Length: 444
Image (cartoon, rainbow, N blue to C red; front, top):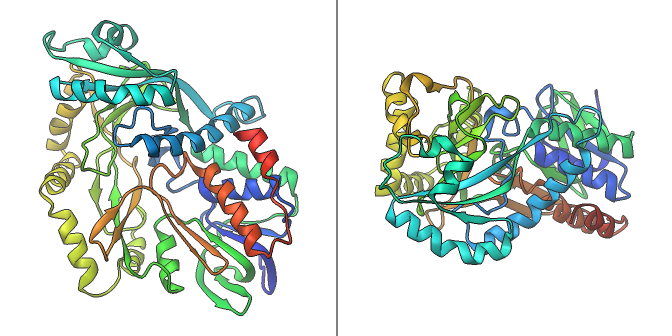
């Protein structure tokens, strides 16, 4: 569709779960009608939101042991919105496979981890009343294979809840778009439309796409790691770079009844190894993710190699920052091992040692490398502090919001849409209304 010379109130770049959540929120809860969404691929949710590119987990902060109580409180508030949305939509036509529910636990192994988990439990049990601390016997009742073959003298402890959600975030994208169109059939939805260039001209942005030129008063860029590339072209985020971390997975037979996480290493910003039932096939267990740096913004997309260097930046500063981060003793050892996990033959033999911390009796012959499974997460590098900035990254400029969203971006998509909708109304001179009360009534 050629949109030459058409001017929109709001233009959203990116058809993943973050962009489509905002499209839904604006369409249902605001009176802004002139909205456009562009997505470079032929369907929604084909990059980070695709089930083969992520762990399909709705993160609340209850079993993520790298979360502080403050972060868990914030993430829970927003993840609850997604939970309420999918529960409301579960009986809608086409939503049968939107999500599955399983128990989930975080498993502490060894004296040090057990003591740490015991100390962690009291404040988190107040925030998560359904979270229980369980000992060996009950762990075995819920997850028999976690005990099968384990040294009876090895100390173990777990926190468990029955409220574990496995979500097909690609289907969630479609649900958001379908419901947005029901509320506003005049939405301009443009698939296979890539943004080539963006510039600010007077009171609007000019967006050159693969299908023509568009104009918009407000722009929201929700394009993963590519967002920083566009931000830098506008003069934002000049002190930032991206460390692209690619995650791979292994699969095995059904050995778990629910999700089982291991304890997060405190200094590492990457998810601890865990086992999950596949969202569409409970007979398959997915183990991972591994994590290794790659010089691409999208895995399996070789043209994104060139785009990666546009986000990385020129000069010594980003090189020094990345070197300082990568050659940290703990992180370097972690990255080196994760490179080995992806190698043929030896990778499986090394990785099974990690998997056996969860399922001690799993056979090597049962563990297979999941080819084509695993995406990329853009970790933000601050070239001023020479450190990784953990969690989500967002830049707000002159009538523009730029979302560079690593985990738990999908879990917080509606919470961020709520905040962004308020900001967009402000950008538009408060000429429109965002019905916060209706949003809160439905999803808080």
